[in-house]
Image 1 (cartoon, rainbow, N blue to C red):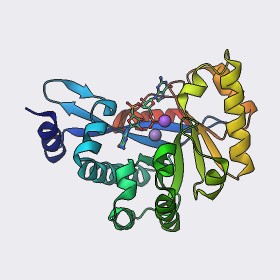
Image 2: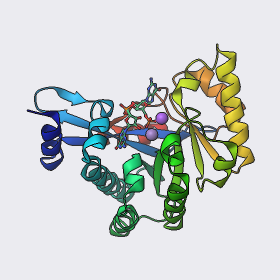
Image 3: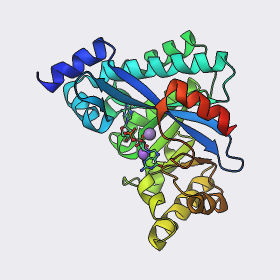
Length: 254
Ligand code: G
Ligand code: G
Ligand code: MN
Ligand code: NA
């Protein structure tokens, strides 16, 4: 069967699932949020990474129903966790460029926040630097409107795109996520270390908070803590895992 048709059916028949990865406060290691990451549980091929189907979903327009499902499911799970008093303050969801450009996005976000009674700051949307920078006028308007709904906005994979400082200054976002490619060799590669330090200084000068991705070692954590990085995400704390497993992890971390 063509993969497009298979993916369409996967969305309709509930073969997608979300895994969740904690984000912790750097200073005490307590969980503060989680990022929702989609996977496809294929009946024959097992668990498929989003890298293998998000691009197809974007090419075929399936990203709209897929993205809507992800947003709904993430908020539903967050509401359950909140009702269970889980130690978690916010949920982060990835948006693709097409979702950001979709005329229905604002109404969709407003609707899901109302149904799950999310208060300002509980829902975070991550857009990549290149997504936010393509057609900046238009995406700035959308980001501003999302912010006015009480959505926290993060620029994902920061450092991998080409944002000019003047654009960054205008971007109505609260959080930068340092791409994990810069964190990986932070201890051994002086360039990477200085890029991370520069991103942190830049972000802080603009009043933004920073999440470092891909934190795997104590030495990375210490470097990031020394540069006042607010939040950390990575295998040092937990991998992306199904909701029940993640909940146990959240309780351990707190
Ligand atoms: O979880 P993993 O490291 O395999 O994710 C790989 C990539 O897929 C990441 O860049 C992530 O941003 C992207 N991704 C994961 N879940 C979603 C999603 O729900 N929507 C979109 N647009 N991208 C996602
Ligand atoms: O692009 P985005 O930041 O949304 O993607 C997150 C991706 O990074 C997920 O696919 C997740 O599985 C992966 N990831 C999360 N933590 C780590 C880590 O510590 N090391 C590595 N290598 N990958 C990670
Ligand atoms: Mn992300
Ligand atoms: Na990233």
